[in-house]
Image 1: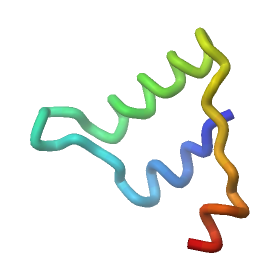
Image 2 (image 1 turned 60 degrees about the vertical axis):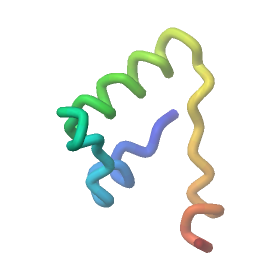
Image 3 (image 1 turned 120 degrees about the vertical axis):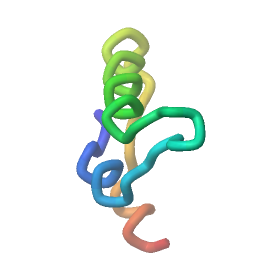
Length: 48
């Protein structure tokens, strides 16, 4: 499961490489569906 809200909130991107936030979200969703390896520890993220 990927917390897409955090990615959107912090506007994660690779703009210097023409990679948008949506591009990253699409890639993460693809990896998560194929590999099932992506998880987010919300408690850990909130404490930082």
